[in-house]
Image 1 (cartoon, rainbow, N blue to C red):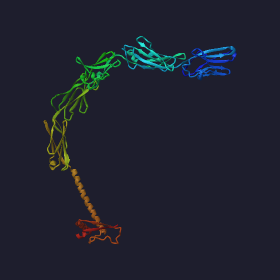
Image 2: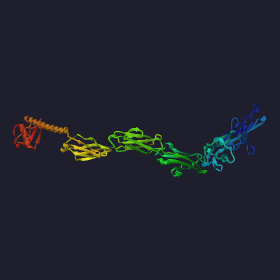
Image 3: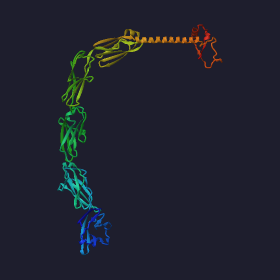
Image 4: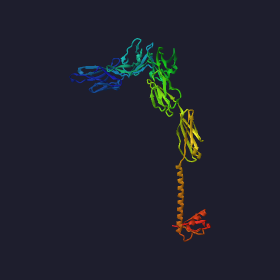
Length: 584
């Protein structure tokens, strides 16, 4: 028989009884017993050649006997661990017996770990709690060990403690719990802790690990950084700058910001947020200077300071100098010089009013100045070392001269009594005035040195004969030009041609109509009686005839027409009504 049989709670235990009888003799009986608490054997089975007798015990409903006479116990409980005895009787060969110890186990649940929910200070005067570990429903009783970063921890005076509690539940299973207390350092903010429950199974010591956890370690700052974003070498006027203060403590300390003004520090903390960020909007050169971030750790009230210099690159004082500075006339030359101030190197570029690049450098030379040439120029100042830092300055070059008429509506083809617009455009500086030699409604438009005048008038014989004069003048002189008005012969000829054609067409229509009437009369198609009317309702008249009655109020004209057709004069009294018989 095996000395020990182990089975998990709820399982089935099978205990074998193997025996040998000399000369292959048969057994007389086989008895199964268990040993109770008083060390007394209690029979379970009595087996003989004639049959099997099962005794009335607490095991009766859970026992079974195999063909090999092995004893099986189902639904093993925590009360089943006992010593079971097998006794074999063989007549004259005597009696033999042996025993097996039944052991029961229950695998515990995976241990559950719960880290300390608060912060653990490295300056704690007492050994702080790190985590708790619990494992339930095990048998026999287990034990718990603690590990940090995979390495087992052991109790140390005033440094590490691991008290455990073993509880036997009403079910007979055990619950074990343990709490880890240990001093921590700032490096433990990255440490991982876990617990392990150890239990026996099949004669071997086995283990179950919990999940690994981290704890929130409080430690003061040792290093402080104050950064300018973007990089301080690239900050320019108009930028938004952020000062970021970073500390390596946990939790983050309280940050304060200051700016050095002469020998004093100006407190800027009210402008910063709680995360150590100070934002400066639309900076200029007044924001230049030294800034300080100060951290205060509330755990040990320690302070650290860090300074940084903020350099705001700028361009100021952009101005243009003109040589000569005296009044310029057409044909003169001038030199424009551009200058500015900046803490970094500058580059200059000249452009015209259309944005076309003219020259690189701070000087622009202009010769043979005229009104027509561009008189507005732009000096662009750039800082190559600071992308985006640039300013521009526009300058207008005033060229003085007497007026010059550059466009006029002459000759102008018109028709008599027509309303027309006379146009006169000139260029001059100082700004000129425009006068017309005739009366009308004038409108003026001014664009820099250009002026345009439109005069609305009605064409008359006097205007056709004399024309109009445009006079433009300023303090430097006068310019005049004559506008000649010409009758549009083509339009007149076309109108006369249309009238002649209309008369000819009317004559032709009358002639054709007269010829048709005369022809019909000669053929007898138009009978006309002196009585004034003919009866068109006679019985012998065919019903398919169409008779049209023509009445006219112009008796004299009708009479003349009929006289011309018949060659004889009709009395006016006979011409009041006429009838035309239109026959097929």
